[in-house]
Image (cartoon, rainbow, N blue to C red; front, top):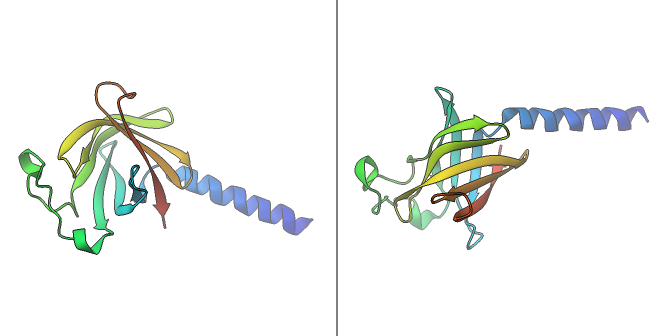
Length: 142
């Protein structure tokens, strides 16, 4: 019985620690249309806001891809190393009021993210209001 209680306490502690991490960390992006694992994005905090940078492209054929459709300073920059989540602010359980860049089409969308579970992140990009958009679920990696 003591072993069972100890195991449960350790499990609860591990889950609590992971939730305490919040949204920061490394996440594997999963394409919502194809189910393909596309990249690793590191989500970090800077000056109280949340940002996300592509740190690895998983498809070897796309390793040197650039953001040809992007505008401004991001035009023709390598996707690996590109900041795609910009300026999200914490609002209760979610982070919003920022933007997300889709490197495939070069467009910036309004964005919000929230933890679905300790290792599952809901990422929603949209135009206007959140009903008009796309949702991806990213997996935390250690």
